[in-house]
Length: 84
Image 1: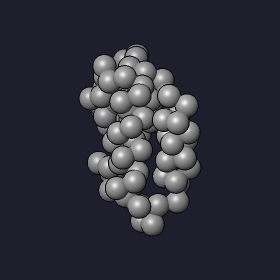
Image 2: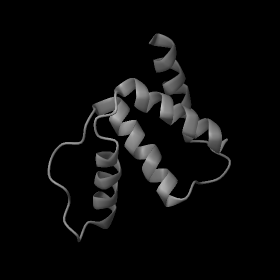
Image 3: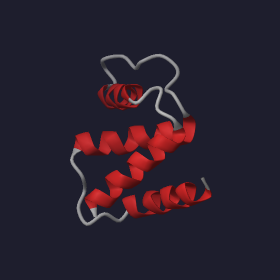
């Protein structure tokens, strides 16, 4: 568990210095896995249609609902490794 957490924190740091900026769908995947790993399932109301960015983030996070923190951390690590 400690190794996974350390690897996750390293991947978070590395995500800020990727060779090129990922496309928006990949950025949403990174966001959703990070939120799921650190906060758990999405809560609250879905943002209205006037908040396009908030709505996209909410939907991406809701798509990984039910995934355990460990699963989300591992997927996040794998995704960042693939983008390097």
